[in-house]
Length: 263
Image 1 (spheres, rainbow, N blue to C red):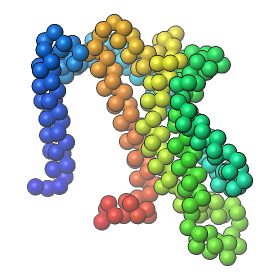
Image 2: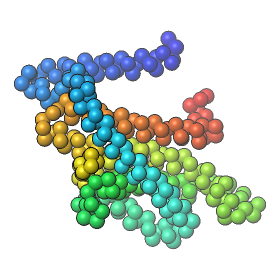
Image 3: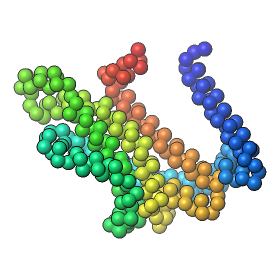
Image 4: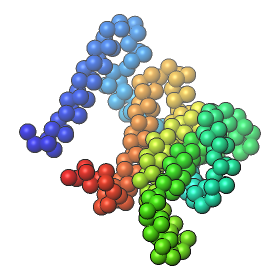
């Protein structure tokens, strides 16, 4: 059987098996408890009945996720470059970055509401904080992990510091950067969702998927709640798919991982 066909059939078979297991669990828990696990048909009906609300919430969540994600990329790249240029700065700041990374972001939500108010601004800041740390840590590691032989070669030919950074260190750090970017792309929709839960607002139709989930849960609209979860999964998939595509475009012609995959 051709490999391409197998790559299509196996996921399809796994999906069909998952649906069968889903229905088996649903019927095994008894009719009186089936409302806790809506069937795929009920979830599709919830998509139809709540399509406008879900689409509007998805757009709001996407806006918060994109703004926070983009801000994290810009700030983390600048900070990573600064950390890589000076070991003194790196030693001074790195422990505090790690400490902040281990602090649950949800702790900052009430403070952010006080500082910038509930709604999109708080959602963007929370998304930024969640995405920022894997980006800055991975990019910094990439910039300081450049092959020493190549660094010495550049210095032997009297390359300027700027040439060393732009022509050697930055390209060498790209695999690390895209690793952090993939992690951040996975976390961006989660960050926006957490922001919706903890600091979101529905003022001016500004509620996102997290806020919509709270509403459906309070109203016991469980199929709509599952539909909201499905939209969130799709949003995360889109973010990661875009990053993977960018990674392939930037690395596939020279990085070993892609060369081995193509071999």
